[in-house]
Length: 226
Ligand SMILES: O=C(O)c1ccccc1NCC(=O)[C@H](O)[C@H](O)COP(=O)(O)O
Image (tube, rainbow, N blue to C red; front, side, top):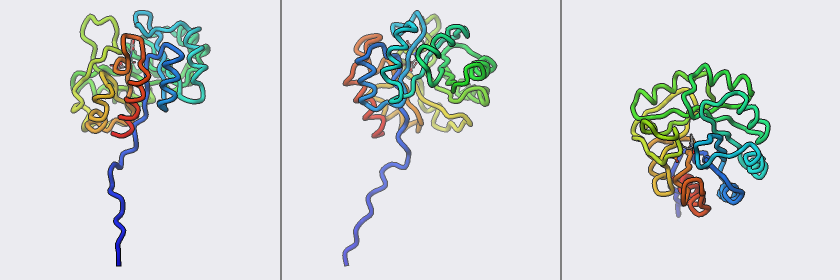
């Protein structure tokens, strides 16, 4: 009698969701959609090489609408800027990447009726533990590398933090991993942290603000196969 072996159990973890952030052109949107990114990020922060006007954000968002969720990224924004972008780009998610405290995050969530993601800069275990404070305020926390003092931007810098800080993370909030991810390291990052969501910007660029379609495809494939 012959026995058929069951297939080997390779991976019981679902593939992480993927966000490609800082898209600035229709070609970059198309590349992210072709690679089946779950979220695309549009940056509204004038100091960034990825900054978009409301009109440009609206045009790019319209191209992706219904095929990926649109995340608007802001740094300590005024309500007027949020209103303008939420309406123009029909955002699905608001990402706050500045120094917004829990009360401000909760207020944005209540005012706009959209999920709010809060980016948290990480260099130490205490930074990871700060996530607790956003329970009930944010819908997701995004752990990102802490920018060096005096940096022009709080994110999108291609900096990695120590992933072992997240190895035992069991916070109550959904969470994601950002900071210096790339096609070359995303497999290791997902294995080390078990991140349910990965977020990349400079690691899929050929120059600041210029996304590379091949790198986006490689990143998404590597993240899914991790
Ligand atoms: O991307 C920007 O220009 C930016 C500007 C201001 C605040 C945050 C910004 N980006 C955040 C992200 O898009 C990233 O997901 C995250 O910081 C990781 O970026 P990277 O290390 O370049 O992958």
